[in-house]
Amino acid sequence: MDSAEQDYIKKAKDGDRDAFVWLCEKYQPIVYSLQRKYYLKDFEQDDWLQESRIVCYQTVNTYRFDQGLTFGFFYKMNLQRHVFSLLRRQEALKRRIDRTVTSLDEKLEYQGEFFYTREDPQALTSFQHVTVREHLATFHTQLSFFEREVFANYLIGKELNEISSELRCPETKVKSGLDRAKRKFKNYMT
Image (cartoon, rainbow, N blue to C red; front, side, top):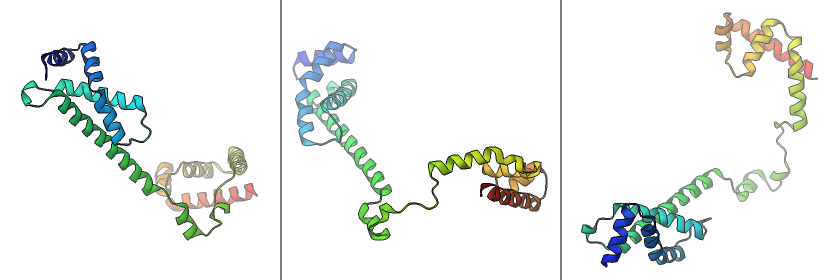
């Protein structure tokens, strides 16, 4: 390594922007070489250059002249490790996605060739959803005060024992009140 390069490294370490840019540009061929060798999904030229500048900055700050390595070799080693890290991250993401995705072949095998034409009978259409919400908005007038309290707590996901302790009454009374409210709601909706 020549003394001019050592000066640039020292200046870059001290925060000299021009020296840092000079080092990044000098070692850009390493970036292009790794770019041809490894494929990073959705990485464009600018992404590669940005990642290389980050690694160059880290390399400048960790490089020691007494370690017996040239700056270029140390930078290439760090950049290659960084690329491997990015590749591992992409593979981990791909594995996570692969675990959660069901293939069309699998759906065909288990559900038959017309799986995509079946509708979920439990799913509400948008119209049904709006209708239920409208009915819920006025339904409370059909209930007694106790039934209204029980039903409101039930709708927000509370368990019968929670409702019972909150209303300070036996769980059997809460269950009866909820059953009445459900029955009234069913009649109200039809």
